[in-house]
Length: 357
Image (cartoon, rainbow, N blue to C red; front, side):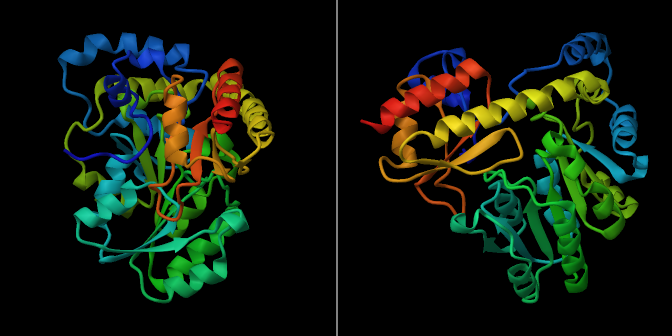
């Protein structure tokens, strides 16, 4: 059985500890701390009577809602069973066999590419440089000849945000080198005004988006791609039939319509992210990196490794993400989600204690 290398495995962790998942404070999965919006819950309940029918395989109503939300044409939208489904479809869609991944990055890019026999290389961003992307370094690597480039913005797990002007230059470099750009904006809902979606749709490549992080519905599996009509048609042709179930489609439509929830989330996450970052920075041996999403990457300066820290905190009912398995990072890095005030205070308090052990 495959061991999926990412956070959010609270059920497996709970089984290993012999406790209920609810007894673990999960900072490993970066999910909206406000929880599911009431209108989404209502939409889920209202969708139950439609379960006697097969889902709309083309997810027409949801595609229209996504298109309206982003100001794009319906032909530019491909709804999916989470953005991960799209990551696994893209190596089958894009012609070529050499891919460059900007790292550190989500492990499923490499997993999906390897499954289809692609050759994988990395452009590693450095911690000492704040995980900044050097356009010159990218240009030099793309000149080596790559068929696809995978770039996450904001970065995961770094939280680093690249402005649209930088993405525009990345897009231009990809065009001049014949490289297909995969821009993963799974956490862009937390800073929507910085999205490069319109640029990519017009300039080539594809944008991957998720509805599960910002709207706190990871158990439903829901995402979508934005791209040109030809790219989207290609992705849709590769999708399995009925990959997005009826409740997920209903939840997505409701989520996109809830403007108040979006605004409350933005205010709440910004305030709690600043609070948590300050608390972590005040701990001897912890260096949190600036982030634009709902999580923080932290470097351990001396003291235990990330794996040791994870085990020590787990003994206190807290789960963090050990980032040593990310390409480009080592055992000195961990990631934590931004949660509510009391939970964030508990994390900082317990971290202070275990760092002294």
